[in-house]
Image (cartoon, rainbow, N blue to C red; front, side, top):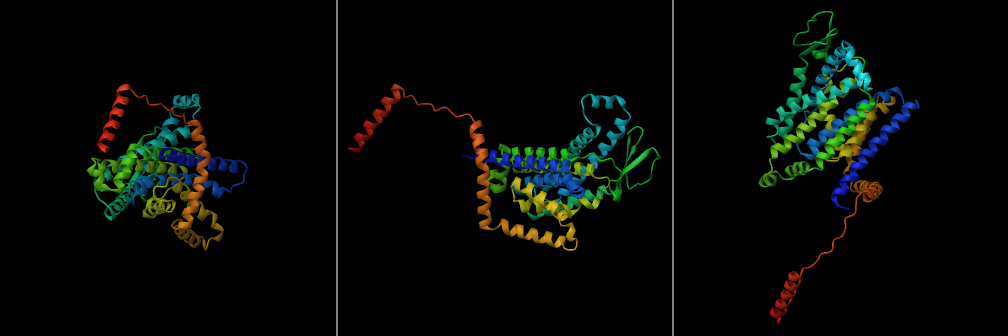
Length: 400
């Protein structure tokens, strides 16, 4: 089985596991066999999966250590919730638009969260491009330190921002370091150091989170397996050789960095749409380190590993809530054991064996769906045949 089919099988396994997990969670919810606390963790799990997959594109595939991922998440959260609140009061003031959404069977909340995801991704991508221009010319620890600084700068700038919306017209009012209330018609939903407040009702759902996870997997896996992805890995493995072959290293690093920032912004918009209050300290260096932990434990460059590690490590503190005094200690022990096991040769052999066993049914499906190539017989012309005989005679004469 060639490399192309192996990548295809790995991608199919990832999609299949995500779909099975989603259907299983929906079955548990309908059967009332899942607690409210665990049900409330489903959307955050989707958020952290997208964040881990997107950061793996920068750290694992591109080979650049970024510690400012939470900053892009915060930009997506602020921009996404702003457009969501604007749409909320604009749609309410426009019965014609509500009628149009009902005619196409689209819920206004679903429309708002979709637009907020798109806007959050766009603004985060713009910020990633502007930051990447100076940052991606650095290497190693210097790049990590500068991305950490930019992440903190973004968070501190956003804590000075105040945004109000007119409840009658939907008009937005922006202020910097000014918390004065304009009038009773205006509602403040971003209050500087307080963060995002009073955005109820929530617009994010588990189904939207599941769709965003599939979208992130589709973008990242197709980018990795494309010609651009091979160029990104070549720049990671040997920068000098890639430049000697004519590859623009900064360009391909920028593609990975901006794509990662866009997905992080979309995850931030989904996170803000799931909560009524979001404090700015949620997007500090601790969150960036936590996302990096997901990537490292899942395996650098391993997208399926990022999905599994983000899911397990997000659920683990909630499952250990009964042991409130010791749950963080158990969490740390699990992290250490996971790192030891993943670096063990025996564990690696077991994982590779299980992976090959999972690939067998998918390989059969792909072989059945792939059209077989017809074997073409090579037809020799008279000139080629005579040339071959002449060559044999000449070689025999030379040998004699």
